[in-house]
Amino acid sequence: MFAGSVWFVPKMALISISIIAPSTWLVGVGYFLLFAGGLLVLSSFLTLGPRRFFVWAVLRPDSAKDKRIVSGPFAFVPHPAYFGYLLAALGNFLTVGDFYLAVLFIFLLAVTPVVIWLEEHELGERVGQV
Image (tube, rainbow, N blue to C red; front, side, top):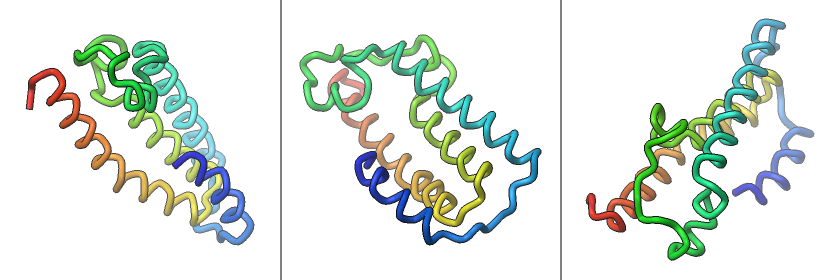
């Protein structure tokens, strides 16, 4: 998904229309959301460590411990990295206001719950909590 966005986003920026003209206040809120989202992703990475963060645990499941993490940001939000991505996507839209960023945010809102459900199901099978 990331590799596709590296190709897709610059192309869309060339042809996209602005659907909102962000005020100074909205830009400030957008930057705050970008920063907060980035901190959530970073704190998730630091809590999980590189061997459990995202793709590595899927590619090498034997290297990941079979337990649910409930410390750090996981004590407050079950999936802080995904929540951070959503905050950052919303913040990006609010700072720029382009149509393609709104579409990207809506896409992430639609896809992220499916990914979370799949991950929860897979983890539940591994730790015996299905």
